[in-house]
Image 1 (cartoon, rainbow, N blue to C red):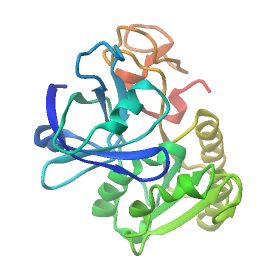
Image 2 (cartoon, one colour):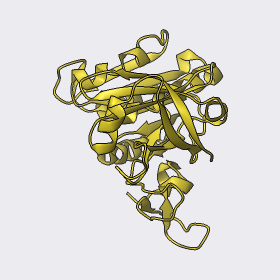
Image 3 (cartoon, rainbow, N blue to C red):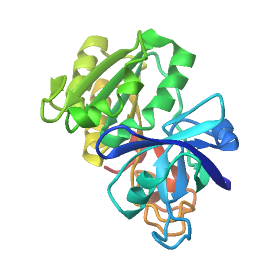
Image 4 (spheres, rainbow, N blue to C red):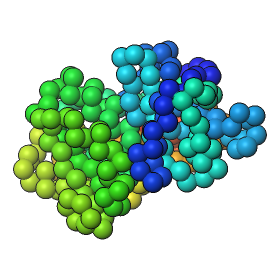
Length: 266
């Protein structure tokens, strides 16, 4: 974990409210693993807003860039959306634990902004496991939200990509869990792994379905996080087992954000 002020090489608007910020950060890019995140200070003076916010690592490049994708929902992200190439921004990271790649077939499940970290993960799995064994299942509220990540899933030829929208404006009309259940019928029991990030109810449903299928499942939790060093306790979640201090709680910033689904008390 390292604090640094890095150059913004691009800040691309992907949809009405979703942006991709590209940062020149060779050290962070070299150290990053899929599932990790950066704590970003959105203001220059450090007071407006006061606290950093976590953003999952969307992608890294061989030229030493780290990309984050974000949705404008508050003061910090609104300020970030105004930043331009050539400016600088303060980051800490990469932080947290990432995904562990294992399994015969790999099912990458993303919902809403939970799609963001899956590009980096997909690249790693395709490199290690090969395209035929990678299945991408993405769900979003509507077509516009899904198409914000169009650059992500279209170029990955040979990878099984299945899409769903809540309102039926594009692809399957329904939930991403419908797509996972469909895949379960096709692939049956086996040493398969599900990697999931998205809204909590979606991840709970994916975890439940993965257990029913007999598949492994890792989830990347999204929680309120003010410090990123387990001091504020804002990211505490209840666990099914005792932590290193004998308590029944885990800190998403330090123990996660990626967990085996069985470690979480849903």
